[in-house]
Length: 363
Image 1 (cartoon, rainbow, N blue to C red):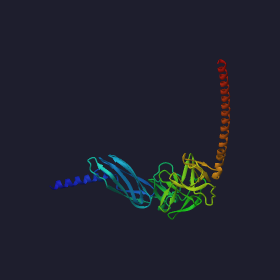
Image 2 (image 1 turned 30 degrees about the horizontal axis):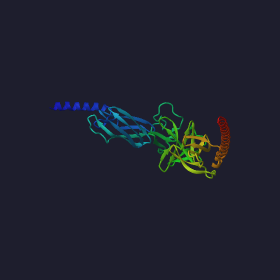
Image 3 (image 1 turned 120 degrees about the vertical axis):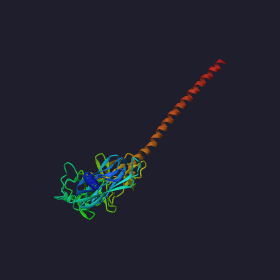
Image 4 (image 1 turned 90 degrees about the vertical axis):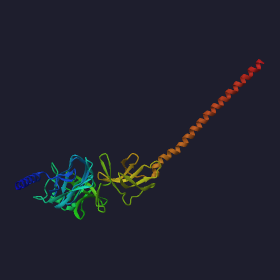
């Protein structure tokens, strides 16, 4: 009996040793799993884990907290997908895989199950000079200054990791904007400004190295696209009508919606011009008025705004000439008709006289 117990113990130790060598798989229940529940990642780097379904199907979503960034959602059907986890700052974080609408093939409902992944984010050896999860050639930026001035400058936008740039060297700047000092959540950054009306922040994508320009609303703590209108290769930055602008007679100030952006506009009181608006915009470094055809959806540069009544004068002149021209035609037609009637009367009288003379001779 003792020999049998020893044999069982040896077998259990052997099985546990084999299990310990297998990749870690954490099941939510039944058929949902992730490849790892505890990982390490360096600051500024990205690692991937697998989330899968074993004889199960359904949707899942990804969220995170702490020093890591992870986001997204997808659908599984007895397969697996990769989930990217980005180390945003030194410390600890958690990633949550939520199985929102999920069930096994045996109809076991797994909806509401959550798997938590614990992440340790550490400072890499030699400082923050890694490739930040991007393959291929990287832009020539000083990552120590660009992305690691403060954890505040790192953010998650459009399901991708970005950083607010503190150095705009090499960034293509739109004409008409000047580089200025700015702040983002208390940190010093460099911005592109058009006066005080438009302030653009440069955001660097950690994955593909691209740079995008966005406005920032401190009240809602959100980034957004600047108010623009694109036509062909031109980008028009929509502006307010400058203070002190003298409105030409016949125009009224109104509000126009362009690409979900509300912009000040002028509208002529001229009849038939209800779809024409005049807006103030910046294009290729030059600002001025542009006429917008709401019906056609097109924008055209306007050299000068003329009073509405001046625009109407040519048409009024034609209207005044039109009745005179019609009256002349009427008089000529009336004269011709009168001549024709007189000729007919004369012919009728002559015919009757000849008929009468012939009748009297026969008698």
